[in-house]
Amino acid sequence: MQIYNDAVLNAKANKIKSHLDDLSETMAYMGSSFTGEHIELSNPAATEVLLQKIATNGLSVARESINQVLPEINYLKSVVGSQDDVYLELSEGFALIVSAVINLPVGFANGMSMASDFHKDKALVQKTSADLAEATRLMSIISSMDMSSQARNEINRNINMINNAEKRVNAKSGCYIASCVYGSYNANEVLQLRSYRDNVLAKKLMGRLFVDFYYLISPKIVITLGRFYTFRKLSKLILDKIIKSLNK
Image (tube, rainbow, N blue to C red; front, side, top):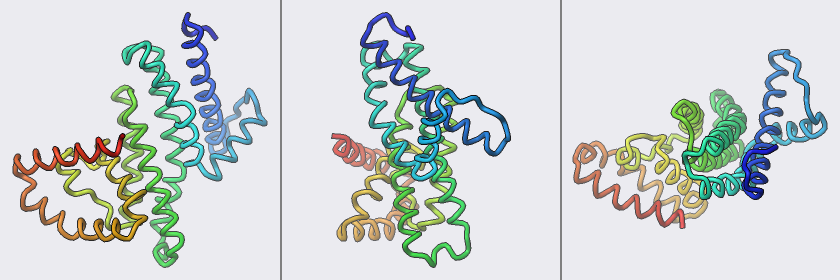
């Protein structure tokens, strides 16, 4: 399909679009099993394989999609600019469909966490917590992409679902100081810090001790100092430096 006159740009745009079409068709086919709607598949065998992968490990599919496609989207942006209509359409479409894929295992985790005996199964709690940590990491990447305000609202709804599940699975889930500084638990900076907490600090003894200490003192600090501009300004300078080092 001719999207751009430049051969390299056109090839990359078509690669992105093909990936989006495959995911969209598979997700639509999955939805049709609940609605009874008939969907004509362009490649039934490939859709069945992708459907099985999403059903088995949606987070893995989302991660692979981000690793494969996001560099192509970023290349488009670097050449045509962030205001290019085709780029914006592809960026938003990718963010929404990958967010929907992430939302499937998150919804499953959310449902399990409501069961009265959920916390009795330590192995299940640990796996669910790890899945939610990975979902948070992936959504922090997605939320930094260019999209319309309407699409961002949809992304934020999915992030809220992760937040709700995380709070049920692990009572120690709030980033108190970061949320105070950046104004929202859903802020991209908070998502990055939560991802670092869950994927790095939580896997080391000293990291876990630091997290425990943080949750012991941070609520009191925010209650006492959170209303002061100087505290928020200084905290933001420190956290901005930490986030910058994480993104190197």
